[in-house]
Amino acid sequence: ELVPVWVGLSLPRRSVLSLAGNVRDLARSHDWHLAWRRSEAASLPGIGGDSSSPFALVHLPTGGSAADPFLVERDGLRHLFYEHVPQGARKGELACGTIDEEGRLHDCRTIMSRDVHLSYPFVFAWDGEYWMIPESSEARAVSLYRATVFPHAWTLEKPLLHGYPMVDATLHQQDGLWYMFVTIDETAGGAEEALFLFMAETPLGPFEPHPANPIHTDVRDMRSAGR
Image 1 (cartoon, helix red, strand yellow):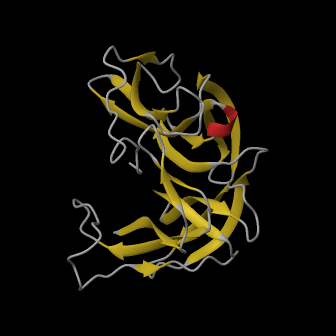
Image 2 (cartoon, rainbow, N blue to C red):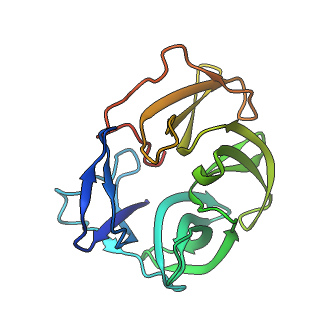
């Protein structure tokens, strides 16, 4: 099966280590690109080691930068949802296209644009419908959207969490509960400080905090990265 990833290709830039332990990009002079490779369905794609199936960059017909890919297969098509930053822009929007057997993108369209930066379109199926939780940390909220016409039309269902900058909300269902992992900046100072966990009986919430929060504070691996 096709396994999408995102790869950072960075120009030289200055970085500093913040008091919270994060490496923060000062120059922000970088572009993100999508890449793909073939992999066994039961295995993670990995980054190296399999020279018989190397990663290949995905050409973006609309130009600009792309990141945070989520793949959804439906009706014989592979729909690729991703963050798109148009050429010359600094604010991300959400886009979707179909990806073929050779990793080529077709019919790329913007599916969501707001007055804040959007990224990480976490798409999932539940109760016979498709849902999405995009990252909108500048809005200090984690919000749930429902597909009215899949995959291009989405409507706001409800906010799930609010009050702090929160990034990369990721859901996991297990033993009758839905768990949401999300990295939160409690000080609102621009530093991704800790990984928090919330629980609910359905993706509609209400989500209650796990008693052990924050569950992880190591800057090296406290942020989600896809499913």
